[in-house]
Length: 143
Image (cartoon, rainbow, N blue to C red; front, top):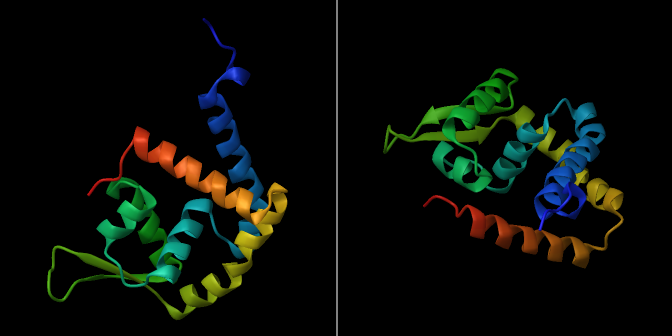
């Protein structure tokens, strides 16, 4: 049986991901943030001082993607990267004062995005959970 793209789960996920990115752009552009930068900012505002490895694992980004992103954010003055004092193999990431201020300014983005979806909060939670299960079955997180 041959399926046309509109009938394929992969196409629905792919096109939804593009729509999500497009919906975030007008919310993030005024803050001067890209979507990946926003994810890093939110991850650090939830748990500041984590290692690059932990951050990459949480965001499911490889170091070759994450490192240049962190360098750009450091150059913008939003975060610092420092070797761990007890294990120099580890690099710890911390938000600066400017980064914390930017995270505070971005705190309304989740609500604004939720409103754009037209979904209820329980529906958003259910959809997030279903997608997380699918993601984890297709590509489990590295440990």
